[in-house]
Image 1: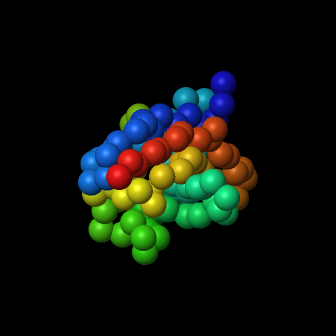
Image 2 (image 1 turned 135 degrees about the vertical axis):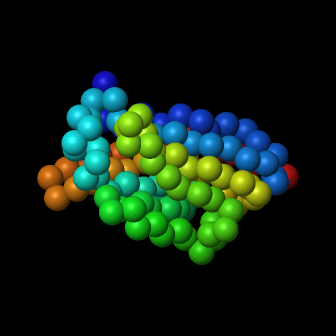
Length: 118
């Protein structure tokens, strides 16, 4: 079983919402609590780009393109990170990847497809 498992992607119309989840089923709680985590996306023919990150200390950063529309947060009890996406645009389409890293590890999920139709 993978260290990180994403879910929640799908097809949505422009203006709609989706919530992505990234679970860490194999990670012990003490390890999850010190992970820096983030969401990245990759559209066809483009490089993978940062969408949002949340540090182990709770510091949050968003890319300019999603700031104000997306919200990243984590549930320590469930060992899960979320990305609430609202006011979705066609340009938000792509494969969304979850990342989790510390000074001892660096994990990526398998990705979940988000498609926003016009």
